[in-house]
Length: 142
Image (tube, rainbow, N blue to C red):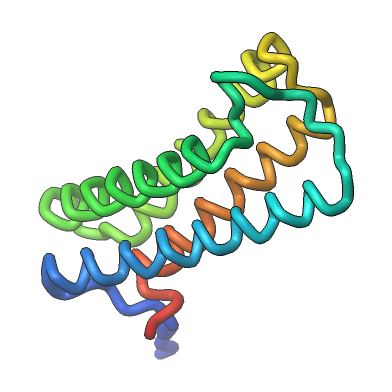
């Protein structure tokens, strides 16, 4: 008989889930703002500006926080109503990530975002999704 063990440890309480989510969001925010700084220092023409600038600090911070809140709520619901919440959460997160790329490809150009800006936005989505999911499911622990 063969046993498989996972490095991930599911959250055991609501407080544990909240703590993990907070660390995931904090990590995501640091990564996104570091990447934003790198984009500015490299002089990448992202093409956006004005009141609806998706590269501004507010939208970047807000999207990371909202992603964390929805991730925690989704995991809690899956934990309550499914037998395999971690597997289902990772599948849901992948699906949501794919759906969130649709506006990057379709709406962003109408806001003046260049092709390089679209790549940067997709990278920002990755920099938010990966740490939030990793902390919530317990792949990364502090």
